[in-house]
Length: 518
Image 1 (cartoon, helix red, strand yellow):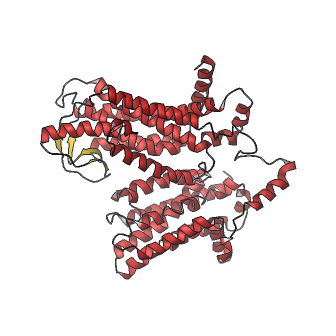
Image 2 (cartoon, helix red, strand yellow; image 1 turned 60 degrees about the vertical axis):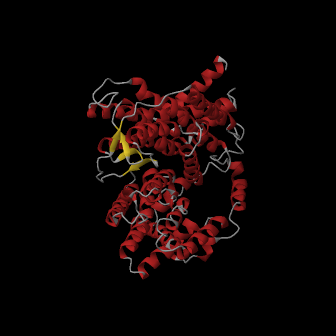
Image 3 (cartoon, helix red, strand yellow; image 1 turned 120 degrees about the horizontal axis):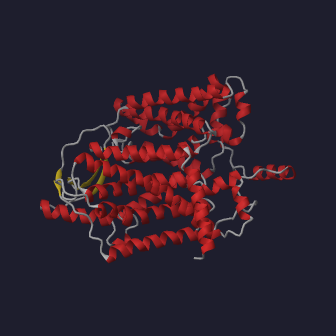
């Protein structure tokens, strides 16, 4: 690579990093990372080999923190970094870059590099958390107060984490430049892609088939546990049980991975794959062609053409025509009226399945699917007016605070109730009051959460990302403390009724502030 090209890529990456680290989303994610790090101190976040854990030494602290970082930051970090191209379009930076000699490959690799650096910065927080854990435990490399082994501690981050985060960064830029993968639904699609990559990694037979590098750490830990405890560990897992006490596990001593040439070459190969994906993202990249950009200001001479184009994109079926009138009906029409036929067909199929799936399994299976399907419908709550440029009209209308806002929330609740009705109704008929209460709490909470985050961020993205994370870790991953819909049967509905009240209070406070012109 020539010096000029390297300089161009570095300039794009560094400018993007400086812009990102000043954003609220970066600070919020750092807060979550700190929570994960703190969870390792009290055992609420743990890496388990069967029912055993390693003594807290340099190798175990580094390996555990690296696995936690790879698993969760690859999931969360994707959503944090996946907006670079859209931001350049919206701010007008992109069209300026299009007038320079900068090539498409240089642009996509530069953006992927900035993505990687942001993820690496967040990982650095967990690196520091691991060092604090070692100091608090008072142990070193031998699990009994020996010296600190810097290589054993850093190696998992370097050899497993770097290729994993590079892969996440490259896939993010590929999503951004590929038509059809730029919208909000792609945020939910990433959960599927991430799950496939995670399952591939944990079930890989060779290091070369291990995209995240977790298999390398898993096999080394399992071998140590088997040799010392005389048992064959059945599974490798990361547990998250915030606020729940855990019995002291059986311990074994792990000195870290033996980094063979084959393992190092496999990690280097995945790093090469990441660079290839970043370069591949240049193929569908429009290089800020005005005719293909999503964020454009319609010029006076193009206004009529833009209006005609918008009319041509209207759905073949106006689903809003089937909804009632009045303010609540209008909010429902805005919420689901623009959905295409495929979304409506999928919603109908899920709603029917909620009546058919055996009730004992329904909350943990079909209800979990039912309440992720309307993600992009709920995400418009609160931020739709600012996003569409109609906020001034809404705020000057009578009852913007006392009528429109409750109607918007009620419309979101109706969507949740209708699509998941089969589960809640059967729970009530079966006198399962605990299950029904949890179901009802979830139906109230989701739209309130969407409304508050939409008003706070003035757009859909914050809710899309936050809800996808909460949905995956909570009901999707069977974490009782974050189960807002009763999927585990162990959650506390009172928490989510309270969360609903808090979210609505925040939403009303934000709307009142808007009305005051602040």
